[in-house]
Image (cartoon, rainbow, N blue to C red; front, side, top):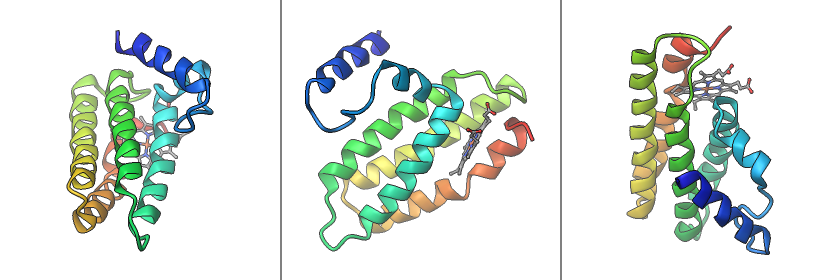
Length: 136
Ligand code: HEC
């Protein structure tokens, strides 16, 4: 349901809205796979870190990106990991979701300190999941 909604939304976006304007259905499908989630989150983490350091932080723009990140994080958990068992995958992806939610809620509060801390928490969380689920 949400998927088709999002495709319809993207079709609308292709008509000229700039945010996510370059995404097409194929990119969108890739985004939902683990590697796509990883690529997205690595980009957004770096971008958000920089934006939070700006003199005039544009929280509106940041909030749009954290919302998008939440969707990607949710999709991550729907994948099957290439390695490791389902219970552990559920635990790791749930933890990841919690961490991304913390970034989003700090953005909602426009709280730069908690925002930076929440990003750092995610930055320190990669290894635990990779150790169990990422093939060498
Ligand atoms: C909830 C689990 C989880 C977390 C948290 C996680 N990753 Fe991953 N990541 C994976 C899995 C699983 C793969 C392997 C995907 C595959 O090979 O299909 C992966 C692969 C990658 C890759 C290789 C992608 C590619 O195209 O081959 C990069 C880069 C990466 N992760 C970066 C990160 C960084 C940086 C963080 C922390 C900020 C992070 N990941 C956090 C699960 C996670």
